[in-house]
Length: 243
Image 1 (tube, one colour):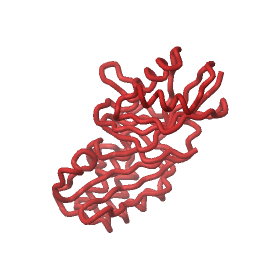
Image 2 (cartoon, helix red, strand yellow):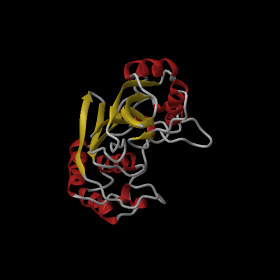
Image 3 (cartoon, helix red, strand yellow):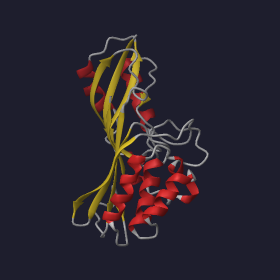
Image 4 (cartoon, one colour):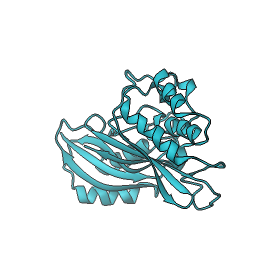
């Protein structure tokens, strides 16, 4: 039995997230269906993470196992012929049997995009803001995230995670143009809804509705209801996964 990694990208607009859902189409379902068809056996795939409804990935990794001999170059070609146009496979390669797409990952990076003036060409993949934001203050608040470990304040309520501890190694707002920015955050792991909740709370800081001290209190509280609102999923990208 051989184990393989699949590296791929997708536009999540028309999907109910990565994970298979009983009442909606998912990226995992499409990938499993295509692999099962090509390899002529039932294939299960395990992804590096669980992106939510509407969230995109510029680099996602999944693994699968098969007892069939795999021509990786041909498999990439056949997958891209069979998969919908909003999912593209970049590579397939064999890995050691103990390599795991989710648990072997050491670093994940997300980008969240916003723009501060109306732009019809950004609306599908960026969140339009209708007020002035203090990005210098937002970056000071973001820097505090590197000093803490518990991110319970940014975890979706009633989540089944065993721990809310994360090691955030980067959190910064980057200017992309005159009215366009993205928030870049890297960590060893992320909680469900964490990035969108962090961004929503930093937006409150940028609007001067939260002081830096109040932001620190929100983080320390461990209470999701004290943090900002969850931002829309269409502007969030899983940017990279490292092993």
